[in-house]
Image 1 (tube, one colour):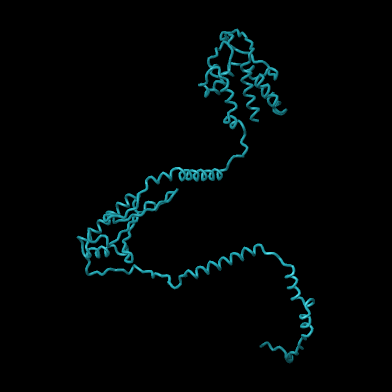
Image 2 (cartoon, helix red, strand yellow; image 1 turned 135 degrees about the horizontal axis):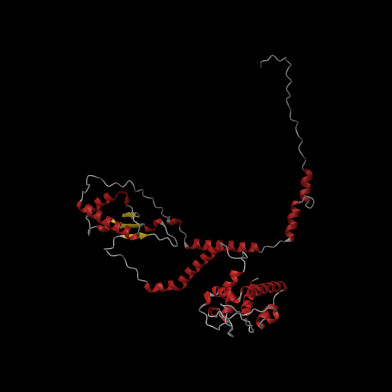
Length: 382
């Protein structure tokens, strides 16, 4: 159907710019003045067409077509030719009835988007009717497009390809920014930890955790008594097994704010341990800490070189046997020998054993039979 629509549009243009028009004189006050100027391809020329010119539209006939249009017409199927002839006959009749001037105005409205075309360039007009967008708008939807789920899968594929390009082209460039590892200096006592969720926004992304060792504060920032006061202030946040003080913050919207809050909190704790109450009468409470017993591997369980060699050899033998079982075959003689040993008809020893063995006599089992109860009339009670 798209080819018929395209051919109708091109034939309509060819019909409008027929090379041998006839001029008609209209005698009235608003008569059009005759002129020999012909209407050519660009639609912008129609806006400059003088109202004094009226062209008579000839009758439609396939014989008047251009060679290119005629070739397309011959390539149509019989049904398409019939539809094409019917549409062109209707178009020719409409042009004759309504007048050429009104038709030119309608063409100007339709072709307003092509006002930038240069005059005399007919290739762009032909490209318009052959354009994929025009064809897509003119053809009916055949329900053969991609579904929403398919578009989602395609979007995920694009995202994976994007990360693959980053890995291939951008990640190797990070090697130029590498620095050798250096132990933290005596001034770098706080260790901050962040959590990043790749590809999504998470509410816990702003959480910041800080850890520091209490012994690192002595003697630069605190003495031994002030350190013990600090441990009493932090309470259950102190881990005596590793001598670490662990604190976190996530109540502020950004990481920088939470990090600043933790830094100020550590400063205030150190200041309070120096200037505040020492809590000498309060013992250090470590009930929150439950040490986990460490299990050490016994050295006598470790294998020596000879045992390791034996283990490798046994594993190799098992592997060879496993491979041989995969290519195992059936031996007919072995199957016959097993059948002879199990069948009494083929094995005389089994036949003699079967003949000599007599079934033991079954002893009768006495059965006690009780006498039936004496009949009594029913009295209503049991």
